Image (tube, rainbow, N blue to C red; front, side):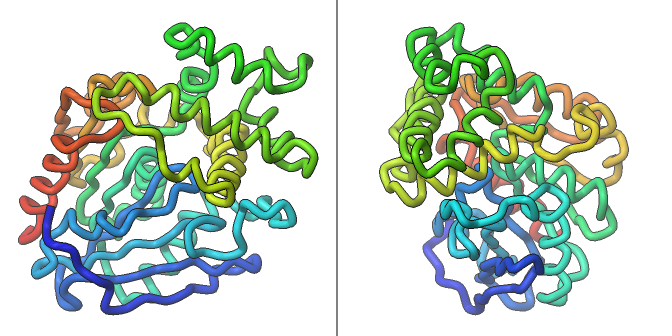
Length: 312
C-alpha cells in the first residue's frame, strides 16, 4: 500500500431526513477523483483504505454511509429511525456528495456490500463513473442472503443452529435477517441479538487462513450499529426492486471498465456472483485470489487496478 496520509478536507453533509453523512478527501486536490464505498452495511471505512490510491495522482474520497461511522444519527441507537436508510437513499447521498465536491466523474471502489451499492449507483449514474473496481464482490441477491444466513450452515452446523435458535420458534423457517432486525429493535433483546448476529458473522469468514476475529464486533456500540444496519438491509432484500438485476443486466455497464477481485476461499460470498457478473459485463476483468473475504493479494490487485487507471 501507499504511505499513510491524512485528509486535507473533511466535513458533514446534510443529506436530508435528519441525516448528516461524514466525508473526507485526501491525496491530490487536482488529481483524478475516486470514491471508496465501504461494506457492511454499517462497517464504515478504515483509514488505511486511503492507501489504495497513489496520493499524487488521485483525489481520494471516503464517506460513511447513513447511520454508521462518523455519520449521524447512529443506527445503533434504538431511537434512530431506519425507514429513510435504503439503497436509493445511499445512491442519492453519493450524488449529493459528488456535486458538493464539484466532481464530474469518479472511479468507484466498492468493498463487499459496497460492491452492491457501487453497481446500483453505476446503473443509475453511469455518466458519472470513470471505472469500477469491486473487491469481495456481492450483488445483494436473495440467494446470496439465503446462503449467508442459512445455506452456509451446512459448513458450520453447530454454530448455525445456535444462530437460528436465537430467534423465536415461529421465525426460524423464515427470513432470519428480518427476525434478527425485530429482536434488535427491542431494548429487552437487542444486546444479545447483536452478539449472536456478530458471532455468526465471525464464524462464516473463519475458513480464511488469514482469519482474525473482527475488532468491530468487540465494541458494543459498533456491534449494535453494524447488526442493526445489516439486518435492516438483508431483511429487506437490500432494497433492490429486482433481486437479480445487477448481475443479469450487467451488460448495461458495457463501456465502463470494470475490475472484479474475489477470493476463492470466500465462504461468506461464493465466487459465483463475481463469475456471473464478469460473464455478463462485456470487457470486465476478474481476478481470483487464494484468499477469503479479503487479503493481501486482493488488496494488491485493487492497488494494481488503481495504478493502471490513474492516467486514464
